[in-house]
Every structure is written in structure tokens, then in C-alpha cells.
Length: 89
Image (tube, rainbow, N blue to C red):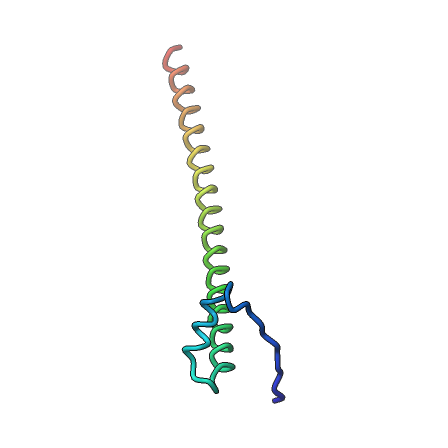
């Protein structure tokens, strides 16, 4: 499998945290750690995306349940009114 090279640049002042991280790595392992960091980022993005989809599904399900409960209450109120009217006459 061929090796693909990508250039990477950062500002030493603005990205001081990145510089500090690079400086803490073994010199000949920068590429390995960059790949690991990118993979970790991708995994987190996928997990957040999945969590967002789950939250939307749960929210949607709750809305459906709330609508059903509202319809049941309306039906109960109708039946109560109907029974009331039947009992009066």
C-alpha cells in the first residue's frame, strides 16, 4: 500500500497546545500519533452523530406518545360529557 503524505502547518503562538503536544512526542513517532489523533477524532464524531440520532428518535417517540396521551384524554373527556348528557335526560 503506498504511503500518502499530507502537509500540516500550525501557528506556534495561536496553537501553543499543539506545539506542546508535538514537543512531548517521540521525534520519530509524530506521524503515528497524528494518525491516532485523527482516528480518535473520527470515532468521537461518529459517536456524537449516533447519540444525536438516538436523542432525536427518543424525542420523536416522546412527542408521538404525548400526542397519543392527549388524544386519549380528549376521548375520555368526550365519553365523560356523553355519559353526563345521557344521565341528565
